[in-house]
Length: 85
Length: 85
Image 1 (spheres, rainbow over the protein chains, first blue to last red):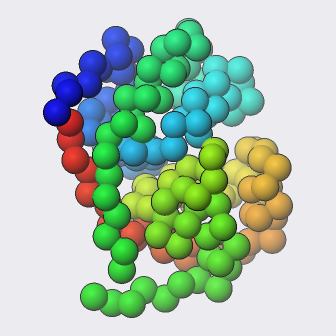
Image 2: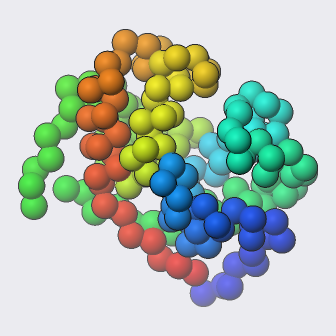
């Protein structure tokens, strides 16, 4: 399998969201396999202030569009499978 | 496995989020296995207007706290597994 390059700025996400994209903090969402367009719009909303969060607003403040695309691609690219009940 | 009761109001979520919790719309996030506290806070933010979205603001407007808890439990209860790269 291709060893997907980890975007330079992804490290700062791992503390709460996990390098596997599974939440490591009580109120942090999982990002693994998440919808890519949704992740891009969420990061841009935090960057613009349309969405406000004590941590995410800081994290997103200096991200470029390219960095946002790379981060969204990284996390959405983590394959998930669902076990329907 | 226990056939988890589908909350009455869950049906309105399925069009975009899927009954399996996997996104069925271009910019709708997956909800399967999502962090329960995050789902509760997201729905409450849409209900209060702290978060605004053309569809979600309407969907959340009349949800009670109990309905929000049931919906969050339903989607977060869908088991997901992650295939790390």
